[in-house]
Length: 370
Image 1 (cartoon, rainbow, N blue to C red):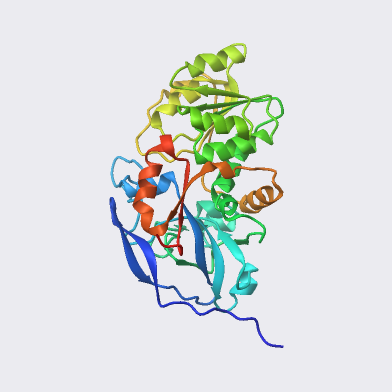
Image 2: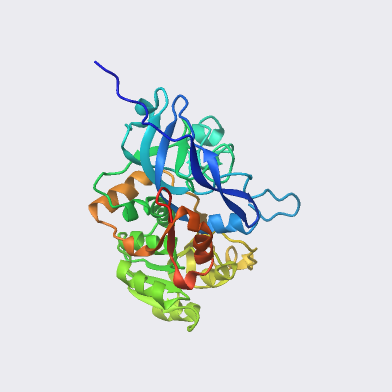
């Protein structure tokens, strides 16, 4: 019986956006990657630009510390960690390892874990001490190119053939949102406040609605985003630029405060009101990728309210659920996509993300040309 094909004819070179440093991104020609054992090469359909890409673009450090500051990126590297594409080459054993075949539509998690450290051995692979994130390290070039490669340890998933490209492009942000919402531990009847209604915040609204909270409140500074939040399931939308949101939440809860806050603004100033609108023993989930430091009075967290503070990082174990919910229409969020641009319009895309009044999810589309 003949073996299945492992590759289609590919060009030698491809178009790619390459990060060389702070605000130094260039459109270049790069070699098309090949597939070594266990690896998958895809032709990229879409690649989103997210807040962490902009943090990298503007030169923010990975963490703010007193001493050494690790860079957010390792240039030169092709950026992009929100991608979908079609399998065009398979290394030896890759089809069996990843359960994919040539021509399949696929997506991969942002993280490529080592599989060997303490976190990987105990199932916490997304916290891997040697993890690579696509588009930030040279070992794993990202999706802002015509083609990209998934290493053998990548976590790869098939996308249903019937799923529209604009929908498939939202798998990664929705998967992140699902993890953050799970961290909130929302219970029936809870009063939940979603702080920030950008791409991730709107995905969170849609997921929070499925938890059946008693009252789901959306906060943002832009009415256009609040309109979408209402469409995706928010019961009440409040513009935080025009109203005292802490007082409003207290008024709605007999003075106690809400049960759960999920913060996804990317704005360091949002942390303090998030803490103040919570009831005692309430839960804050902090998801934002922030450029600035945030300073709060920790007394309110401990002695004042005994709050539960949870971080949320990446999208562990949630990609299959995100794919399933989008495929079955349990979550419908295509309206988040505001821009679809050819790859060589990448600068326009980064500019749009940094000016959110006119954009939400910005997608680059390699292989389309101007």
